[in-house]
Every structure is written in C-alpha cells, then in structure tokens.
Image (cartoon, rainbow, N blue to C red; front, side, top):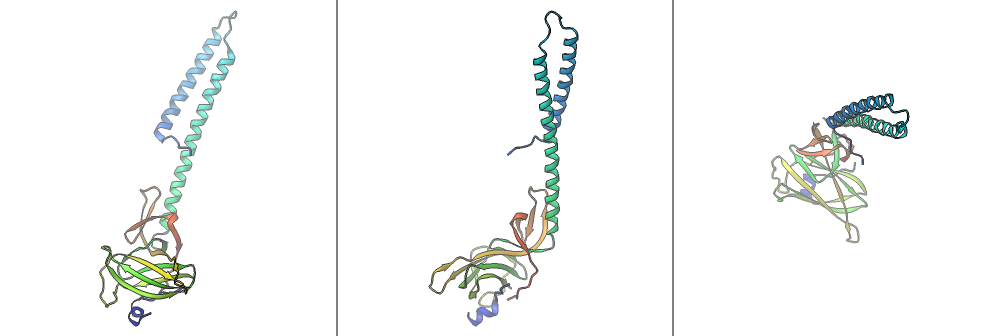
Length: 230
C-alpha cells in the first residue's frame, strides 16, 4: 500500500392466475343468477312433467352439481384475491421498516455525497486493486490493499489520488484480486447506504438507496455503519 493511497481510504474487516376483482364479482353475480334461474326452471319442469314420460332427473342433478362447482370455484377465487391483497399489504409494511436504516445490497454503484461505502467479500486472503470510476467511466481513485478472507468494508470520502475532491454523484467500485501464486481471485461487492424512501405503488415495493432502487429480497443485511472513512 502506498502512503498516498493509505491517506485516501482504508478498508476495514468488519401458477394459477386469479381473476381480476371486477371480473370475479361480475362472473359470480352472473353464475348466481343463472343458478337461481336453473333451480326455478328445474322446479317448474318437475311440477309440470308428464307422469307417463318423466324428466331425466339424473341429467338435471349433474347440471346442478356443475353449477355448484363453478360457484364454489368463483368463491375460492375471491378468497384467493383477498389473500393476495393481504400479502401485498404485508410486503408494503415490510418495506417501510427499512426506511431510515442502512442496508447492504448486491451491486457496485453507490451514491456519493459526503461519503460512499461498499462491502467487499474475498474467498481467501488476496492482494486487491480497488478502482473507483465516475458516471462517465473516468477513474477517480485507485489503490492497492490486502484483503483478508471474508468480509471487509471500503469507505471513500470522495478524494482522488491527487487529493482532488470529486463532486456528489454515482460512482462505481471494482475490485480485482490476486493470490500468492498470481491467480485471479473473485471479489464480490455490495452497496451500502441508507434507505431514504419506498415506492409502494410498485409491485413489489421498491427501496430507494442513493438514487438506485432495489426490492426487499435484494437486501443482504441491515448494518450499523462502523467503517473508517478515508
């Protein structure tokens, strides 16, 4: 590690689709009406049947069972829709819990304001080169570090290698590693930031972290910032 790099940043280990509501309700009302009409027709025919040529009651019974099955299925669809609505409400409640908390999600792009933090994970001890680029792809910082096996955090204060203070914006971190034999070591990156808002109109709800949006299942962990800023 060079002295200039050390002064800039320091890593720290640390398929059934339910019917729409309107369609289900409309279909249910239609079937219910036809069901009642069928019962009325059946009763009338039975009352006025020819004793010498009686109606085939088995056929009427089969039709009655079919109508009852359809009506039961529509009721099941209504209940399924209610369960889906409850699940959506639970997702929204879960998403709101993250607002104001610092979380880690898979990614390499972070929003820099006064600082930006990435989490790194190395499968083994490695000598790593960390490079940060801005939204146009220009390299703003690079440094060599020794990463231990496991998790580490890298906090950047926005200063380049020459001491230039870079403006707020979206920056991308990439980390490449080599082991003692010179073989490449894959280093995964996570973005760490505070959830500032939640879009509840989206399905599923979207968390906003530094101008980027993520679903709740992309959240790896909720963290308490404990890194050393560069």
